[in-house]
Each structure stands twice: as C-alpha cells, then as structure tokens.
Length: 537
Image (cartoon, rainbow, N blue to C red; front, side):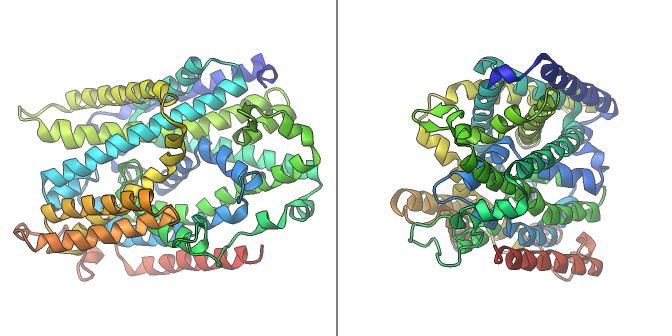
C-alpha cells in the first residue's frame, strides 16, 4: 500500500500540516488570558462551534470502523444508523436543562458547577474521572490511528505517532480552543468533500445507487431492529437499547463532558450555544449516513472484486476490514488526490485529539491548579503560560501512553468502546441530582456515582447478555436513586440555589425563550422523520 503514496502526496500533507501551525500561531495573537485560551473569550459563533463538535465525533475510528461494520462485520449493516437517532432528542435535553445554566454561570470547567452546587470533593471526583478515562481513551485512539498511518504510509509506528500527535500538540499549545475550533472547521470541509468523492467513485464503479441497493445483502439493508430489546437476548444493537441508551449517552457526552461542553461555552450568547447544538442535531445524521453508505457501496464493490479483500493487510488470518476505505483511496485516486484523501484521514484523527488535549488542560488548570493554589493571585500572562504548559504536558502524556497500549490485552481495545457506557450514565446522574433537585448534597451525589458505576461493572461481568447500551440508563437511575436517598442522611444545602437549580419559572433568564420552542419541535420532528425513513429500508 505504501508504494502508492508519492512525493507529491507527501508534499500536500506537509503543506496542510504547516498551514495548521501557521493558523494557530496567527490565532495565538489574540490570547491574553486563560479565558481567551480555553473559551475563546466567549466570542465564537454558532456555526464554527457546531462544525467543530461534529468534527470531533467524526473521528478516524468512525470513518474507518463504521464502513467496515456496515460492509463486512458479522451482524453489521445499516443498523448502525439507529445509534444516531437519539442525537436530536439528546440535543433538546441539553438545550433546555444544561447548557443555558452552565453558560449563565460563565464556567470554563463544567465541573466547576459541581463545586458551586455540592462541594469541592464532588468537583474533583468528576474532573479526575474525566481526566483518567479521557487520557486513556485518547492514548488508545492515537495507537489505533497510528497503526493505520503506519500501514498506508510506510512510516514506522514511532514516526506515525509523531506525525499526527506532535503536530496536533503544537497547534493546540499555540492556538488554544480557537485553533481547535477553526482547524476543525477546515478539517471537516476537507473530510466531507473527500467522502463525497469516494462515494461518487464507488457508485460509478458498481453501476449507481440502484445497483448498490440491489447488490447489498438484505440483512445489511435492515436499518431498524424492533424485534429485539437487548435485555438479555444477546442483541446489543437493537432499536430500543440504541435509542434509550443513546439518549442518556449523548446527553451525558454533550452536556456533562468537558471535551464537548467547553466548546459550547465559547459561544457569544446562550442562543448561539443552543443554535450550535441545534445545527449538530440536524446535520450529524446526514454525515454518519454518508460514511455508512460508503460502507454499503464497499460491500457491493468487494463482492464484485474479490481481489480487493485479498489485498487488505491481515490481522492474523483475518483481513483488516478497517483498512478498506484507505485501500480503496490508494487504489483508485490519482496522485495528489491521494494526498488530499490522506489529509482527510489525518483531519479526522486530529479533530478528535485536539479537543481532548485542550479539555484535559482546562480541567487540570481550573479544577486542580488554580482551585487548589493557595498563594497570591497569578497574572493573566502567567495563567496563560501555565495553560499552554499543561496542554503540552497532556499532549506528551497521551502520546507516550500510546506506545504502551499495544502491550495491553486485545480485549481492552475492544472494551474501550464500552468504558464510556460504564460511566456516562452515572456522571449524568450526578449532574441531574444537582440541576433538578434542591435536596441533594455532595455526599449523596458521590455515593450515587459509586453505586451507578458499580451496577454497570456488575452487569458487564455477570450479565453479558444485557446490551451494554442499557448501562447508560441503568447507571443513571441507580445514581439518582442512591444519591437522593443518601442525601436524606446528611445536611441539606444551605447556599442560595436560585441560579444553580433548574426552575421553569426562572428559566427564561437562562435562555428558555418561547421562540426556541418551534426549534425543539423541529428536532423532535427530525427524529420522527428519520425513523420513518429508515423503516423503508
């Protein structure tokens, strides 16, 4: 595969990376404080934030893994699209209950809310959990992406990590969240254009869309599975666990995870933040549909070109189907366009890494360094310097960890997709206890978090037939129930909770305006339309 990457392609890749560094250096001129560095002075528009959020979701693992799942995985197919149906509903929940509240409090770290509402211990618990899990997950992502770069480019694993990771860390350190957002916009544009080109080439190769639908096996056309429930029947990807598990997962991810909320907090106003989520709720499904249709077209193409599968690198005796997309790129695209296509893969990887590294730096600075610093106040210049140093430190840490991921059992690499579901529901439960109840205290919130996480661990180990998507639901309700009950054994909060707890009567000042009600309706209508459309497949 590597012989097809020419010097011209490498020149295009090099120019792109140099352009990102130049952009971040230019953006760094407007940074004068940690507020500029982490939330862009809260002056960013809705569209850049929305595109940046989508870019993070559209990682290299998605671009490679989803088509492989649709085309080749046992039990795979367009059924993966069910996972996206929960997004519009989740956006409504975040827009109504979480983002306006957080934006009104002028947060930088979303976990700052937990100290204001509960206590310092709860803040540090949640921030620490975020940092540990995100750092590990990011190291796994760097590892898996670098393996792909190694295979398709001919670079060693070390230089593959360096090429992706170091460049990402450099523009992240220089440009902060502005560089993250605007580089993500550029990367998303490149990625979508390349995906559209690939889909057009595949349709031309197999004879058009009608031939795609005719050649795709019926079991891979099925996009909705109402026949199973995932509650012990062994079906992870049935409609109900993907819908309800997805709702709780996405509300937690978009509303309680620093890597996502931080960009939402960059918005100029509450309306701009909500508008970014609204855009994401409408456009994310078409994006996922695009690369799932690429997978469907690859399945038909491979059925007519048996040598295509034979040319895939092997994992033992099994073809590495995750490399089907880059292999097709290298085989079918002309010189120069191959370089742009590889830039698209790099862009998908870097858009996932940059936001996580910046958010790890933000939570460390806000929740630990500044919060626990007992000395004199620092100047804005010093805080900005420390923020950049922390970004560099987290980047170096995750890149270093990537070299040791290969020594971990393969089961961990498979299980990494489930780890988020172990904790997403409990984390959301803690925020729900704070936002929706005036009664709950920090001790109850932490007890609920531990109970929800323990229940999910129990289900993982002893109830393997239960779909792991249900863990998001079970963990949430266990956290809320235990947290609420334990709170009765301790002192009730004594501080003024007016601005910290959701209230319909006061919510208009947080941004719950009547003119947003039709947009909530549009998102819910979009969900209904998507379900109806998928039912036709």
